[in-house]
Amino acid sequence: MRETLICNAMIFDGSGAKPFPGHLRLRGNRIAQVMKGSDAVAQEADEVIDAGGAFLMPGLIEGHGHISFIDQADLMDLAVIGVEEHTLATMHNALKLLDAGFTSVNSAASAKVRLDAVIRDEIEAGRIPGPRLRAASPEITVTSGLGDANKMHVKLHTFGMVVDGEDEVVSAVRLCIREGVDNIKLNISGDVFMPNADSFSTVMAENEVRVAVETAHAHGKRVAAHCRAADSIKRAVRNRVDMIYHCDHADEEALDMLEAAKDWVLTGPAIGVIIKSIEALQSADDPALQPQIDELKKLYDDNCWTHAEMRKRNIPIVIGGDYGFAVNPQGTNANDLVYFVEHYGFSPAETLHAATMIGARAMNRPDELGQIREGFLADLLLIDGDPLDDIAILTDPAHFKAIMKDGKFHQQRRDGAINTDQENSGRGWLAAQQ
Ligand SMILES: [Zn+2]
Image (cartoon, rainbow, N blue to C red; front, side, top):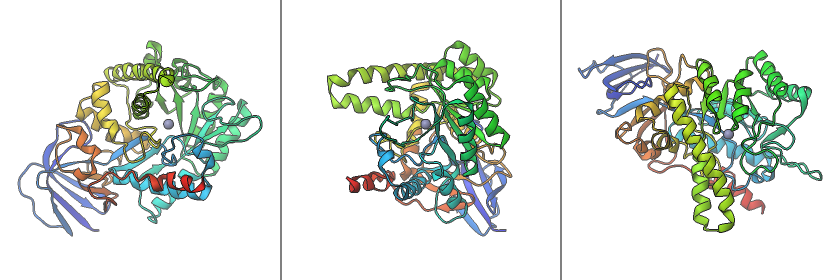
């Protein structure tokens, strides 16, 4: 089997422990040997790479991806784009994530039932480049909930599957499973700017959540949920939702429940779109936008309080989430690393631990992803500079000396520049249709 030797690296193994000097021997797509120490090592391998002291870490893991989001300025863009263009845009977005150092993406919803699944299969087959991908369903939601864009007189499909009552929920979950998804997404709470389901409301009923989770788990699939309201978090924990996203308006009881569930539950804040939306609205300098800014600022404040509390309680948090809007396009996902440090009080080492070893739990592969450890898969980043000193260097792919996925080096499509080309994210096709 082909052997690769990476010598003279500063190894951050994903556990959060201090990096150490060492060498790595890869055999095929796995890490065969981790050699600690700076003593010279026999240069016997099919390929020898002298890291020259560079920082070597596990590949980043996006814990709440939406690679079928098309950097839309308006959610209606998702209703307008054709299936064919949408598939191509999703393919291009997968590459952007890999170019940005994300070797794994756990999807938290696909805009159409089969988009994630077909792209996952193409990547797995080696026909297109992209990260490892867990495919998600669209956002299963109730009438008038987040993701129900319909009007009485027109059906508008953006990213939701609208269902009401146990029977419809079960049918939708089973249909998505038949079509190949790994994760079922439920919108249990509402969201900002929703007229009849705001971010403090819990609109998916207890029995609807229960049957969705029972059905998904019966088929060996996992469940992710959109939960901003405190009651929605509690509903999700009670019903064994595996990944409970946002948690902005958590109260003490919700945090207690998450803490008691920390061995099996995962959370993820998705703060990037909040920060970037506030910035965009403020820069518009329009007094009419002030109510939206106020609503988002309340969300931001609650989100920061919650995640600082979660950190103290050691509740596992994944990085990423909700990239793929015009304000925070696909490929800028590593901004989350900076946000964890600047807005939640994480150390850079804690942040990278969340982005690797905790992320591997979201991928449901904690025993082979997210760590530099013997037997684990060789998903690696070789970094020019020390992200523990300045985590922001990871937002600039110019600092990536190498991106390796599954034991193979990935050739960044754009050396030295972040790949957020909005032309092929879907924006270009939308413009052509107008
Ligand atoms: Zn999301």
